[in-house]
Image (cartoon, rainbow, N blue to C red; front, side, top):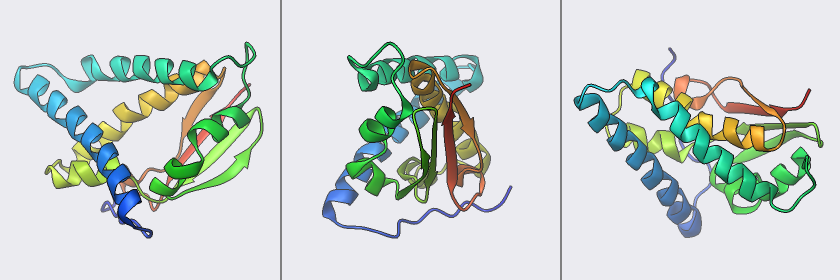
Length: 165
């Protein structure tokens, strides 16, 4: 695995505060899973399903009162724009109702996990678990999540693709 490199290129007080909120969420996840491991539970025995359920709920919120099959353009507008786009330093590569391809250049979750002392291997596993939330969101939009390279596994960026069909 390549060395994890994850430094924001853009800053400011607002971005720092919002990134701090994401870092706090990442800290909760890490500490809960660490305690579970201390008690003999393997992360992959329960965490991916729990985070997927969270994603389903978030996806339902994002889809809102849209048609029975909301398009991925709605997902981009509600989940991958504005402040969140700036926090994760995202670039939208493609956006149609059937495909949403996003590139992330910074991840506050990875920053939190590194700060907490998680190993690179643990950070990769934590990322896989966290991405189950995005898989749940994808399902809420009638799509599948395709994950390319990730910052958590040494990639220069995270490539996330939501696709139908």
